[in-house]
Length: 221
View (tube, one colour):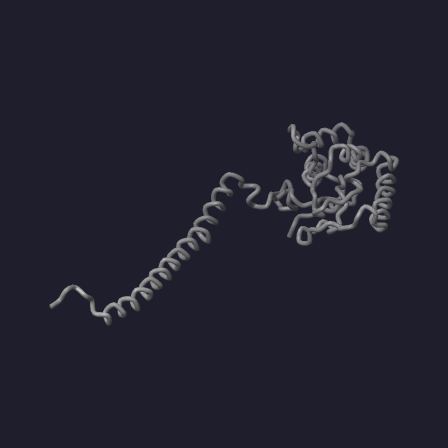
């Protein structure tokens, strides 16, 4: 007479099959989750952020490129460049050589003798170039930035160079000062006003072209 007792052999078979089925279900869920997240985070999210970023910030999304009057790319407003001619404003020292591919600071401590010697040599060169005493030189014209490609200088550092630039271009100082005022950034309540050296020099070339082509800002190839 059957009183509802299961066959022990059937019970053992069920116990052996159940873990296998659960393992397959777990692996299947994990694989589906991985595929979904790969599509969302690897395709959908980057595509959406890139599209929205390009729409909201078209200039920044392309690298904040700076162009001359002919539309040629001559650099980025985020990266400093080396200027040595008297016709141009000169930015901060750079331990990286103003190379965007090798951004770095000198990593020298204030007590380092090499840093002191470099700062003193730069101060003497600036004082001679601008016709001022060392005490009149703003500190950002002597100290390098941590990145080595800081494109900005403070307003006093730009004002110090007005006389030299105006004389080299044979224009009045008021015209140069006007361009500085137009190039001021960060004029709000947070931080100090700064001047982007590359943009300022491009404005100088557009408004008061130099006599020779050897001094003009060189386009980026």
